[in-house]
Length: 339
View 1 (cartoon, rainbow, N blue to C red):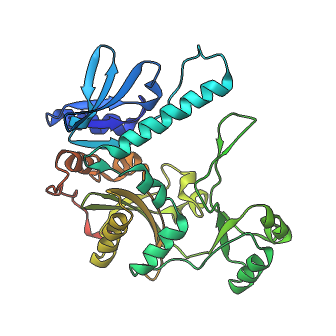
View 2 (cartoon, rainbow, N blue to C red):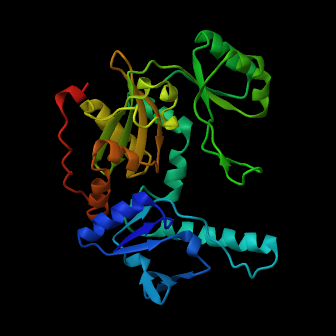
View 3 (cartoon, rainbow, N blue to C red):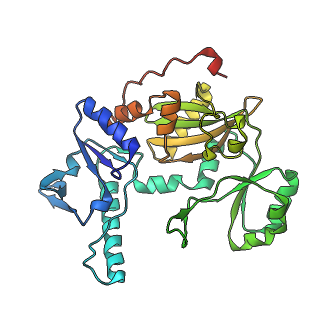
């Protein structure tokens, strides 16, 4: 049995689950937000064995008997509304959250993308850049700072050709909407220079602007490396950050990586203690590969839809045969699509 931990309306998990069932696999799908309202969890050590009992809707499943697990995008546990005190309800939810995370981390089975500490460790942008450099990958000149003077000197060194972004994955809660605030990559301008003193209140990450021929989203799954070109320079909307998405105007193509870059991607994911990673790179007009960052649990379904890359099949391969699987063949790529 394969354990999939995610929310109910997750199209990535829906596709993989359907493919796994077509291959004859049995699936246990569990969303942490069901616990403890409609599901219970018990961890039992007895007779030298460990059992992790998940009970819901009349079924009792031993999660310790699963053969592999995939942590996709679960919700947070929700305690009973019968707890009248908000502080006590928050305490109960935090205890439940700790239990489900500790249970995931302690499962003695192959985990995708990995244990939660490894996922959080991999979110460290400084560590990502260090590892990429150690593996021989080029990175943009980078400054992470809360010092206005350091920023201004960096700005002068690169003649104002900088971008900025948040130095971490922390999301600020919006009091107005109740959701999270996110910020796209932006070009540094003279107004930012004028307000440089505000850096003293919160750090930012600055990088020299790298000329782009196109960008790459490289999805590593187990021993598979699946690369897609994102031709972000084809439309003004996506030139600085392809996450602005200009569907119908941004070409996507399969990309064949040089062997050295492919090996570096595999090694980067491995050194981070993961079995999955979504890597972003730039390919420059003179064909240099420049590493930007890695998302340890990044989205990939739109890349598969746009290019036909068999990412879902590779995830199935890895979950069904964690020790090593036969590669899923890449789709045919016309020569003109390769650099």
